[in-house]
Each structure stands twice: as structure tokens, then as C-alpha cells.
Length: 330
Image (cartoon, rainbow, N blue to C red; front, side, top):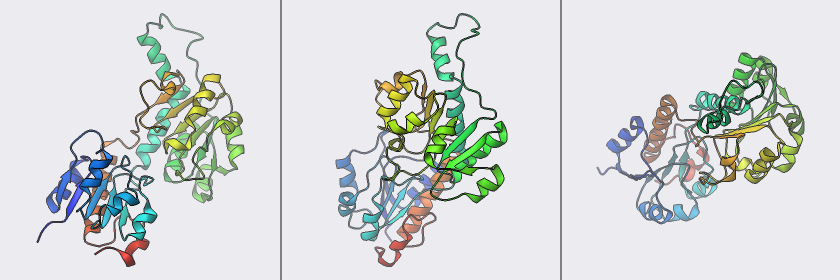
């Protein structure tokens, strides 16, 4: 019996990739960059399964170029790169890799928070520039953490994990803004659900953990920054377009807010000459919140499971669109 044909848009950890290679007629795009759009459209023409990254735009055009496609397994928690409605309409199952990035991402959010608050990157660059000549009583003074207020935008698993670290370790007061109440966070962390403007006005640290959709796109723009404390630190480990990049550059340059720590940006990646990268009070990482051995291996296992189960028309381990089942391609 012939193995199902699949395309993998880039290499991923062996714990998942080896299973895909063993059980499928799989082609893996070998380059360090995503396959060009025209190549991807060609590669999907006779596949039954696609294992994709966030960098691939999986839209109706691509799905229509793949008439045999049964399952799209996204190696990511997010799936903004996939037109899920179009997939469901065409009988294609979509999977993602949730639940395994919580601690790694929360750790990264706190890493960015403290690095930005304590001016770590700025002081390091000053060392390299020869500006560190002696102990400086007025040099590189940052923001305190103990007893301050953390504002969490999106109190899901990751937002709660960050709040737990900040409340338990540094005694921070926790505010959150979310469309749903998080009763556990309220009970165990004393978290208070507030409106967006209150969170902006009262928080010393604002950390973004919400999904990207039409309501949250550009949520942090000029109006939001004007409502924040001049000593506030913004952290984003969610999605770049939630923050208006031009407005953030302006707020950081003018001192409207103190600093920002970003693992995601818009655009992504940032060009090396982007003004955000020239600011001393911006700490930018290349989307590495999930980049730990445990997290990436767990993602690989789920992504492989989703692909292999989908090829057999069996329920996916992490199914974005289970409502597709009655019309699933066979």
C-alpha cells in the first residue's frame, strides 16, 4: 500500500520528523527560509498532508491548488496563517500545537520584562562601546519589580503563568483585561479583572497574551501608549500586529513609556536598519519564546500526531476545526 504523500515546509525536531518520514512519502523543504510562494503552490498539487510553519500563508488559493489535501498540521500554537474557514469549507482538517509552550513563553515574557526594566541590553551595548569607565551612581537606573503592578492582556494559560511568577516571586499586584473572567487567577493570585483603560493607567508592566484578530490588531497604538505610565514597560510575546510598531517607536523615543521587550514584531522579521532596533530602550528577540528543547520537541510530537491522524481521517490530537468532520475529504 502506497504511503500518503506529504510536504513539510521546513525541518523540525527529529522526535516528530522521523515518524513523518517513516510513515509517509514525505518531502521536506531543506532551506533555512520558507519555500517561496510559487514553489509551495507547486509542491502541494498532489499531497494529502501539509505540515506547515507560521511563515506559510495557507489560504484558499493554496488549498484549491491541492485537491487531495486532507490535513494541515501547523507547527505552532497560533494559526493566523491559515484560513480555517476556507479549510473547513473544503473538507480539510487543521491542527495546531497548544498547551506545551506555556512555561517557556511565560519565562520568556518575564525575561523580556526584567531585561527591559533594568536596561540590560542598553548597558551591555554601552560596555561594547567603551562607555563603562567606572561604577556609575546615576548610570543605567531602571525600574523596580517588587510590589509593582502587572497588567495582563489576555489571561489564558500563558498570561496566568506569567502572573503567577510575578505575584509569587515579586509580590506584584495583578490586573487583567480579558473578554472572559479567570476565576482561578482571581482566587489564587488575587487578580482583578478591569477594563482596558484602567489596566493601562495603573500597570507598571503590561504584558500581551491575547490572540490576534480584527479586534486586537493595532490594539496598542498611540491612544494606548498615551494612557500608560511614563515608567511603564510593555512586553509582547503574543503576535506582532497587536502593537502598532510606528506608534511604539514614537512612544519609546519620546519617553511616553519607559521601555519595551518584544519577542514578536510587525513586520517579522524586522530589517536590520529598522528604527525599533536603534532604540536603547527596546529589547527585541527573534520570536524564540518556545525555543526550548522540551517545548519544541513537544510541539514536534503533536504536529506529527495531527498529521498522521488526519491522513487516516481520525480525530486530531489538537484539532482547530473539528466541525469539518462530516465533510472531511476521504
